[in-house]
Image (cartoon, rainbow over all chains, first blue to last red; front, side, top):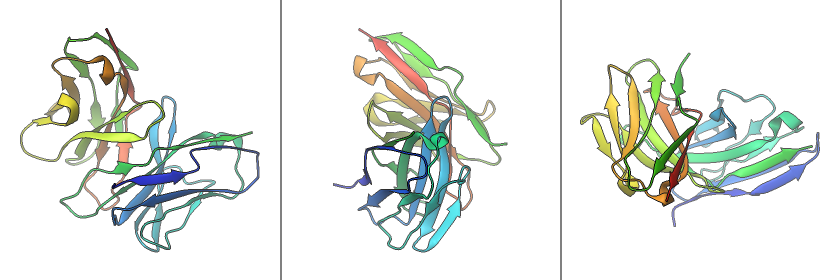
Length: 114
Length: 114
């Protein structure tokens, strides 16, 4: 089944404790992206990657890091999480090129930082 | 600034009645337009998109959307609502550049009562 997977689905952590949220897709998509969803704000892009070893900042990159060493994986790293990073996080992927438009989303990771 | 507006936080309709969820956008050029749906504890699912051509586009689960260039709107519609349509709906636009970034509205909760 074609899908985007994220782990963990739920995470409660404390301020300053480094964490990684994994994202993997099995559709051979070039493009991958991370969004955070907050009430009343919709989804905002954190980072994106056009292909392996190519990453760029989105609208809200502060406090986050990413890497793209393999095409299928795009982990989101919080080096020193803070309570304002408590949110629902989504990974998404898509093919690139003019024929391909919609992005496919993972199930989400709900992160709570205390 | 580029933005997407969903003016209604919640839309309430009775089962069997038609529904409309509104979306307007303010972006440069001719963007790609999307609707996504989010069910509880699930990721976003793609419903439909407008790329070019006919202003009325049909999507999954009987939904359709009408693109109006002069009003910069892309309202989601369904002729007959089902209780199972109750969910959170997001309008999104993607500018026609190389970033592939989706700009989301804040979401509209649709509640269909029996």
